Image (cartoon, rainbow, N blue to C red; front, side):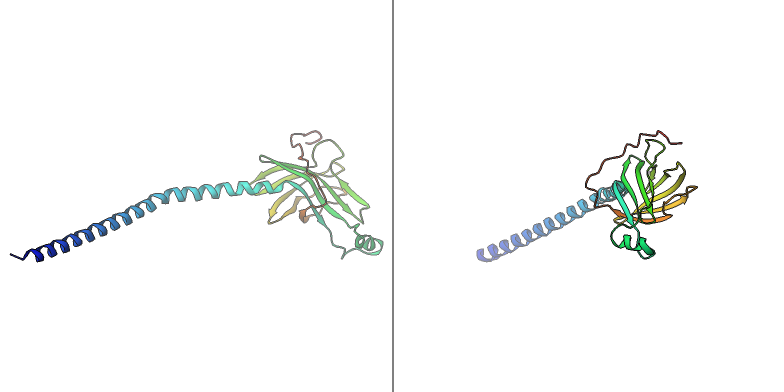
Length: 204
């Protein structure tokens, strides 16, 4: 038998050892719970990322709205046209009040040539928008109508801060639509008026 003092010392050491075991067990249990929570949260995180990936393109599709312009370089201008171009009277291609409503898109246009002596301005054959089509994904396929009523087909694609215009089917007859153009937002237009894409008068 151990003396009383030694017995108390042994009891204290045993108690300390038990307490350490309890602490380690608690730490181990806490770590397991954290890992379980992290593992349980993974499916929710995957689902959230998947939803974000689906929603993101839809948010980007609104970037069509507004007025856009492509101002031509003066490099190819000659004679009086070159002088007028340097004075700020150069030619351009513009899309005004371009509006996306659901998967539909519409707006009006102005295209000039020869120092603005030649102008193709919206649709003079009716009240309908001169640019009209549908948006699929991030690309708009539109029918465009010259002032003569001639029809063509083009695609409009947002690329960073610009719209890329590409003619798939040119109009017949005289027209000043470019085959390809990169349009920037027209900062000279102070107000935006949404075009009514429901108006179809004069369209075929």
